[in-house]
Image (cartoon, rainbow, N blue to C red; front, side, top):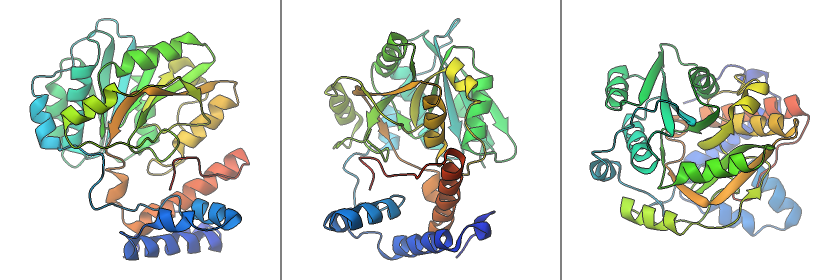
Length: 333
């Protein structure tokens, strides 16, 4: 079923055809080794098809890196975000309906982050179960909740959350992320070491770019053991995903925050990286910090057509805004 997507009919016919074709491929080839097949193609054809197929979501029978939400919640049952009088960092958590993941996200933050160093601001983007979200946040003394009664999208939620923050450093944290011990202090040390750095992010099991690393675990204990082995010097990259992003607030606000013209949480990260780079700011990847990412619990609820139509709309906006050709980065399918 084709879900009407505002603006889709105004796209060039090639973009519309690409969205329809990718949606059909997604429906008909959900378990085919698409990445492997593309890798066998020669140079130019490989690059062309890799770019075309980048947004494909190809599920595996069992993700190599996964955790059971219920069991992990039980293991972190006593973890609560404490009150911070003067937080060094404000953590903004937009949520749009992944209630159980939100609960786990907050408990992991509470369990694995230095008390007193942070506050949490949850932005409820018109979730269907507002009562459940409110109850989850109310269980954490150091967390605050703001709710929108109309769906505004990821960028608007993040911008609204930043406006409510007290700290000079901001973390944008997806509600489907599970952080690990020492994550925030390690990222913060890199942000503070160089005034040119405006964005620092961890490696993860699934980010769709060069921050993705091969990971294999199925329990919280295995995840923590894997994260404890993460290592490597920081490296400068063109962009990172916004699933777990430590940002200098002044730099973020100088560029006007996230561009709210993108739909459904795609390409805001590319756009922010371009805006910061245009002002001489650096983006750093921290290989020594690993977090788990359930990867798109909200986006994957969309129909294939709506997902790919939105991808094409956002890609076109990005390319026109920055006069560049969007390209696939290492780690993407």
